[in-house]
Length: 328
Image (cartoon, rainbow, N blue to C red; front, side):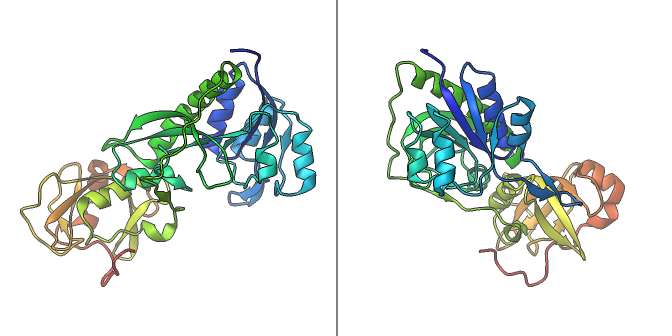
């Protein structure tokens, strides 16, 4: 590697803070940090800095929080930093062409998917929900499109039956930081060839919403189990349990069709460590839920939940709302 690069870092949430931490541990110099304006948080709605801002302040870095990068004032301020490159990780603001063209080496992005699959807002959760066998991070040269830039580096990680949205988030955050520093090292040295994204297999990861977290047990067990894992820890899959909401945190599909057939959502005789729920259009598939949470309670393995509240889960009772409409 030749001389270290002067880097502007732009990011906001915990995922981005992992990349900033990796950058601070590298030989490159962070000349400024850009992050979203402080937002109200907690019960008191107190203005709270982003995780990236908090980390930047710990290291005495200059922090900029413009509401937009489209104004001449914001663009002049950024240009005055004379950065070699800008690293963008889950920043949350659109970078206009004037900003993309300002650093000598342009702007690169750490994206939590294997592009061109899962461009967009929620690539981590959508990969699990869709039943993908693997995910990863792509370091991309940014252009004016939505995650359409040429690829500089790809790192892969498997998705298993135990992978949740939370565990994959943490794995990709660490992986993204390492891959980003490796990319900067290469760019500071002999350079790095960029590969255009293929036009085939483009998919879009729509933003998550609380509305899609309610489960419909007429769906197949594999789809339900994948959604439960994908939506852990947010927005958290749930179903009606009488007048309460039962939050479902971990599940798997039974490997073979159940010998029982019941109305979808019916609780079947449970295992020692799992609730067994009839699902599928004919109620002949079985979803095994191994971790759940009752209102006002802690998330518990089902073994512990049944010890404490077995009366809430009597075989033959129904989960879900009557006449529930099929999910979109």
